[in-house]
Length: 102
Image 1 (tube, rainbow, N blue to C red):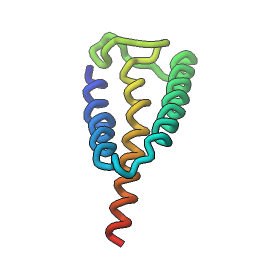
Image 2 (cartoon, rainbow, N blue to C red):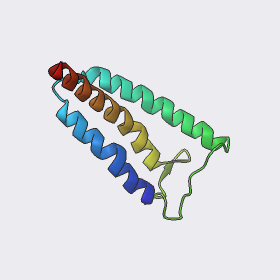
Image 3 (cartoon, one colour):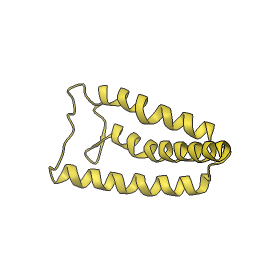
Image 4 (tube, helix red, strand yellow):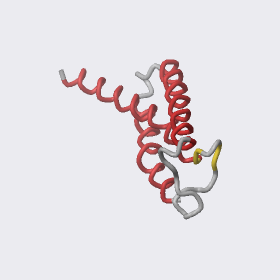
């Protein structure tokens, strides 16, 4: 549960905020394709890392929600989904802001 709360605070909330603020300048098609690619590659990497015992998640100790898909906690799916949105939203805001201040 702690991991889920951290994910809500760090990548999810800023992703929603930044994408909302930059909604007029974001190329939504490019963002969607990029998010799908990063999401897929990130989850494949996580699955391989977990299955090869390179890393693991503490499941059932209150750290995660306990829901897993292919041994990957559901929280990791959120991370892989919202980090690209957060990054692109912030990038577009900064790009737009620096143009206005120039």
